[in-house]
Amino acid sequence: MDELSRLVAETHPQILAEALREEDALSIAIFALSLDDEAGAKVLSSLPKERRAEVASTMLKMELAPQEMVEEIRSRVKERIERLSSKVISFGDTTQRLARMLSRMPYEQQKEILSDLDARYPGVSELIRERSFTFEDLKRVSDPALKLILRLVSKDARSLALALLGASEETRAKIFRNLPEEAVQPIRDEMEALGEVSARDIQEGQRRVMMIVRRLEEEGLFDPRRDIVERGEESGDKD
Image 1 (cartoon, one colour):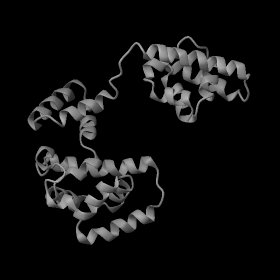
Image 2 (cartoon, rainbow, N blue to C red):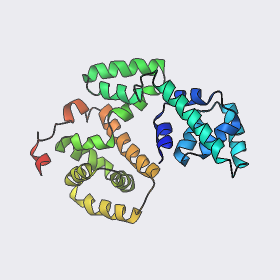
Image 3 (tube, rainbow, N blue to C red):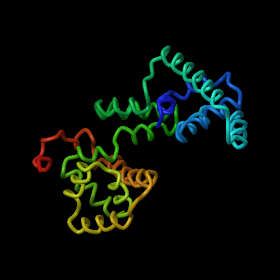
Image 4 (cartoon, rainbow, N blue to C red):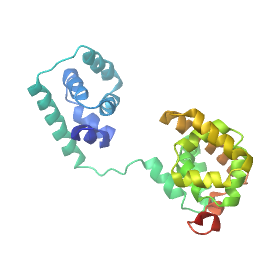
């Protein structure tokens, strides 16, 4: 990824949209094509709906462009992005930030806030729950609580295998240590059989696992405030 593609990837969509606002379709098409595919996709996504098709259509007609013209457009848009970025402070993904803050609050207060948010913005509480406790957080769950979770999760061998393919070594080791003995080899076999999988498949596997975790939470059988332990608090984490 070149320097400008990285800059675009790290720029907030609203700033990118403003930086491109005065550019015509040809200039935007050239700018997007001069970046790597991921950054180019972000350029298209940042445009108003009515301009996306126009720019995409222009891109289809282009195979060559004068080097001087390309460099001028890249320089102009880059300068605009940097100038606009210097005037704001980005708080990042505020949904993720809020989720992390809530996870550090007393559970009853979490529920009150999420209930109020859901009344104002239906469905948002589920999104926050998904981000406040993720598959990787299972490595912080106490062994007894994790064993309970895995007794249910291991029944869906494919989803767990997919989830584990994208897990850190620490999380993977913790889960295998707490899986029912009869489930260990089938899960390993499933992981081997899956081979290379897409990031989307891994995310779907982890999502399915976490759906079971949240169901246990709703039933009162799992409580993150009670069942998450810090490193070294239980002997099982010292292996």
